[in-house]
Structures are given as structure tokens and as C-alpha cells.
Amino acid sequence: MTFNVKKILLILLFLTTLNANIPTLNKIDSQFDALLLKDLKSNKILFSSNINKRIKPASLTKMMTAILALESGKLNSVVTITKEMTEVEPSKAGFEVGEQFYLIDLVNSALIQSANDSSLAIAIFLSGSVENFAKTMNEKAKKIGMRNSNFVNPNGLEHKNHYTTSKDLLKLTEYSIKNQLFNAIVKSKTHQFQSLSTSKKYTAKNHNKLLDKYEYAVGIKTGYTSKAGPCLVARAKKDNKDLVLIMLDSRADRWKVATKVFSEFLDKKPAKLANLQQKKKIKKSKAKKTLKT
Image 1 (cartoon, rainbow, N blue to C red):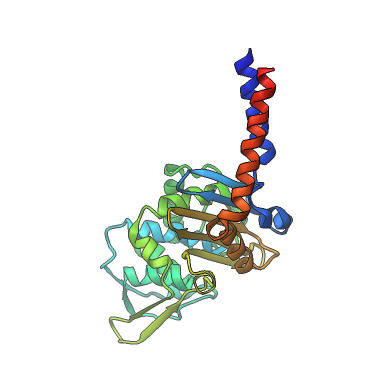
Image 2 (cartoon, rainbow, N blue to C red):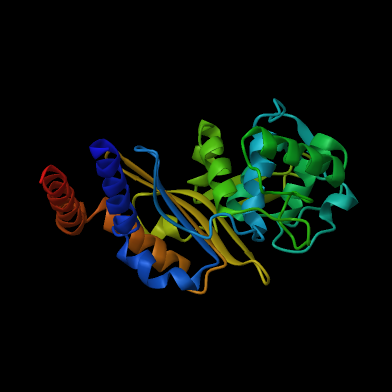
């Protein structure tokens, strides 16, 4: 009986201090449709809000598109651009029908520049059609544990049946970063490549402003549509710390929030976080004494 009471008290103490270490996110939680912060080293969720809420992922979709291409074994294959591959709204790389590219360059363009035509070209090249590729995306999603997601296109353009959750995006992120080539691409600020058929040069520039604003940022992907709003999956690493932050439909400045959150954990631990941890230890100590008496 004493053990059960002690266990319950410790659980209650944990629940009352959950999210306490993230003053920035606690203050602006209402300005996002969903928020999630995870410490990959300790495998702990540090902050979560609406993690099972279905949302529109916008270009975060391209993480799935890219990982399927990276695992296809065809990265050095040549893709010829068809008219269908160019018939998509911006943002676009601006390919011309008949141009040829290595698949790996299209992956870079999709992840770094968030080019919709690159994503479409990947899908059609690998699966023959958008519909077939979407089936592959959904099969992969289920395989890696994304239980509340459905994809209908490779780029994240608006569709009522195209959705995911921050919890599922975390699963996709954790799976994707196991691929070292994925990691190398998403932290690149630019990627230069050229058409194999015309020698026309292209430069993909990263939309992730965090790479310039925060020195420990290492990617991963931005997203935006008018209905999905500004979205971001961000990762930062310093010393032995590794954090992933997911922000969906932001009404706040994504870059400022991400920088501040990462700083609170990676840069300011000795002051603010150490004090909070000490307070937790004191509370637990008091709880133990109460149980003994």
C-alpha cells in the first residue's frame, strides 16, 4: 500500500512539472495548432500540445517524398522532365520539359528549395503516377508507426484527405534522421546542380532561416500554405544534446520561437533549467518524507 501511494505521488509530481522547463512555449502555446519538443538523447517529450490533432502538413510532406527516394536505390538514375511534372504551382525550381537530372539532385531541390516540381518528378519517376506514389507514402507511413496520417500527393498541396499530426511527424522525423544523406541535405544552405541535357545551372536555396539565425541548427524542413499556415520541423544539436521541435500553423514568428526555445535548453541550462531541476528534487524529497511520517 505504501509503495502504491508513493508511486501515485511521484506521478502527480511529474504531471504538475510537465512542460515547466519551457517558458517560451508555455507562453505562446495558443499561437500554434500543435507543438511538440523532444529530447532525442533522453527519448523524452519535453513539451506537447495537440499532438494528435489532424493538421495539414504543407511541404513537411516532402520529408516522406525524400526518404522514399533516398531509399529507392536509384539516386544516380536520370530523370527526364515531362509536361506533367511541370504542371504544379510554386514554389518551383522551374524545370523545362525534356531536361534531365539525377534523382539525387531532385531530392536536394525538394528538401532544400521545397520545389514542388522536383517532388512531383520524384513521385512520377519512382511510381509512374502521383496516385501510385501516394500509396507508397501511406504504406511507409504505417510501417514506421504513423497511425493518423494520409498522403495524397508528394508535395503537400491542399487536399481534404491529406493530413497528419505532430506526433506522426515526429515519427517521420526520427525515422528520416537515421539516414545520414537526409541529414546532410537538410542542413545544407544551398545546392547547385545542372541539367544533364542542357547544362542549364540551378541553385536550390534553403527556406529554413534557422540555419542562419541559430548556430546549432541542423535542419530539417519548412512548410507553408494559406490553409496550413507556417510550419516547421527544426532540429538543433549541441554537445550531448539533440532536440527536435515541431510547430504547426504558427501565428508567431517561427524563427524567433525556435531560436529562443533551443537557447533555453542548449545555451542556458546552468541557470534557469538547473534551478527548475533543483526545485523538482526538493519536491520529491518532501514527498518521500511525507510518506515516511
